[in-house]
Length: 603
Image (cartoon, rainbow, N blue to C red; front, side, top):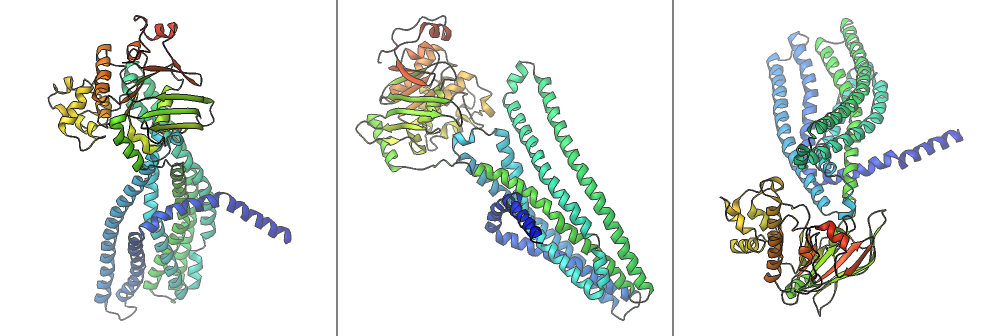
């Protein structure tokens, strides 16, 4: 006996330490939203319970109606008939109200949960989020969040109403016929066994189904984002083949899951049929013996069905609980990632105001950096940029030029050393989310958003006047083509800026960045699609518009570096100041252009 108790205790400990502990944690997270909407959930529960009780009431009233019709008692058949109709009509109205409430609350909860997750994803540390695919994040926001919202609204109300329905039916049956009550529950052991088996498989297949769903969403997103390349290389059939392969995989998982569900359904249905026949036969036997009336027999059969159905519903809620838990776990995985502390710093705001007269100095001192579990990107790097300088970053692709810009923006955080900004003569500030207001960033890829040109420009300065927008477009040499468009600033950009050339998109992106009025401008190959003359005009305009502004430029053309005050080579973990391109590098970057002798010359 002692060994048996120890074995049971050990088993309980394993359960607590394993899946049960994980599921409890997931549902505690879900209950946060249940508590937030407790009034609406409570109202929905009340309506669900009312509907269940009216269903049981129909069975009781039907007994009186049948007995009245068959002459078993002297009750007023008209009154009973009206009562029966009244209960039925009440069920209809309660069902409609519950449906309307369900839709309203479900939409509200779904949108708010998705909004919460969307906000938390945007606030997540850039480096921590970089390992997740876009499609996977989209699926978690849409698919998983929808699953959670549905269960926040329905799980507890359904559980409460089903338990009340089961308890009420069981009490009525026990009061009328104890044997019938226990016969009705004769299939309970089979239902419990099948449910336990289904729960194990449900959790396994829930995870299997979500993985290909996330993968397919990522695949679809990447396909449509890069449709031009797919067509240009004749890869349409290849991608169609991949699409069908993903569909086939999803079908296989769904069919395997259905196989186990079908086996469980057959067992429970057969058991339910046997129990149903037993209840019906027992009721007929009691009627034949004259112990019950026709109405009571009708009520017994109806109550027995309600009892079996309620018990099965309670048991079948466990797989629902697991499905919601899996979705909650996937969302929690994202929402528990390190948060980026988005903050406003009055000192930085004052620094930006002062920078209009004196500019901003940027420093990196003894910086060490590496990606998660990767080899070091930088080892004890030093870098500085003074107000009014154009600083060029040169080096092979993939050596860390863009990473350096992201460190300046506070998107990545150094593992050692410091990255700071300061107004000459003022205090230094560590780079963080608060210091981003000191930088304008034009990344690779010419990122434009759906909407008009005006809406894209106003993202960084919503209160900008039309004159300010035009001045920014003129500085970036974009007004010369925007002014010729039929709708001008109101011209639709379309997704990804498809209607514009790469050079035009670059110039609009530069204009948008200039509207931020930041003392430091970071250009990550932001003029690569411009001809050399336009490129030099744009850079010249940027400097002339604000003499204290600092430009940090990554590029591959000597024409850019000829305008630089100083240059840094980024290569093999080091960032060192140089005074010209190496011959082989210059030939690789622009074979037709001789190396400029003025790389180190100040403007």
